[in-house]
Structure formats: structure tokens, C-alpha cells
Image (tube, rainbow, N blue to C red; front, side, top):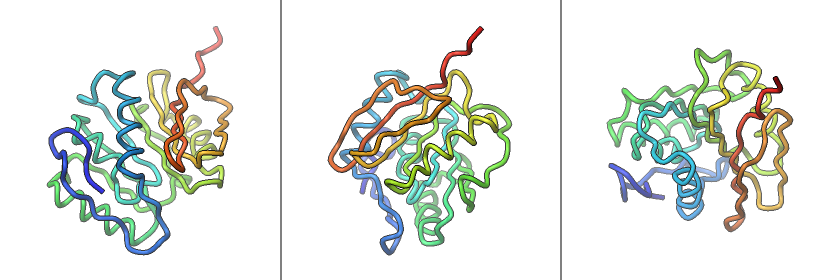
Length: 184
């Protein structure tokens, strides 16, 4: 696994030992970030969250492309070790907030984030459950972009969000979501 673009382009990432986590393939990550660039224009100064972070590849890719900060949330000990090793290798500690906990244990946000990247275990519905909770806790605002990676045959359904793009890449399905417009 390598960073695809930006200031750390080509730099290797350490993956967690064991089979508890499933890192997002480089090709899938490249497709995801192309989808995001076409909508966001740039990652400059964005506040990002990488949830179910694993090695941190998604959040570190966003930082490499200019994001201002990233919150990484992961509960697996081996993944947290790999994540911290990757952050240290890039000397990105000042840009990163690592939370060794479950995504469902997160509390209220200080402010909505610009971009939330989720790569939960496939075929569990964990992404949809997490997103519903994050909506209630203020992590997601009207301007927030959300990427949810699921198995290619999994239909992500989140009541308070609408899908704006959907692409299948290998075994993965990438869905970009936004908050539904306020009824007013």
C-alpha cells in the first residue's frame, strides 16, 4: 500500500498484522479520491475524519493532498499500532487526532467536519449505524461530504443522507453521501 498523490505520493504504508482489518486497495483509494476531487476541487484546509481507520490510509491520503487535520478512529490494537507508525513515518502527529475507540463511542462534535471517510467491516451495516449516530451528534453538517466503502453487493441505506455518487471497484462499492436538504 502506498499514498497515491500529494506531498507523500509513493510513500509506503504499514498495514496491521493479522486479518482483522481489510486495507482499502490502492486502486480503490485512487478511484475514491478521483470521485472526491471532481466534487471538492481540492482538499486544502479540510477537516477530515477517517472512521474504522485501520492503517489510516484514507485519512493520510487526504492529509497528503492538503487537508488541515484528520481524526482517526479505530478500536483494533494491531491497527492502532500500524496507524501510529504510519503517522510517525510521515511526521504528521500535529495534524492527527487518534482515538482508540469504537466509532459508536464517539461523543458530540465541536463542529461538523468537511469530509468523513468510512471503511467499516463489509456486510455488517456498521457504516449506516455509525452515520445515523454521527448525524445526531453534529459530526455531519449540510456541507459535509461522506464516503462509505461497502462490499460491492451491499446497498448502503442511511435515512438522513442521500447518495450522490456510487461506483463499484473490484470487491468494493464506493458511495458518496450528503445530508438531505433541510425541509423549510
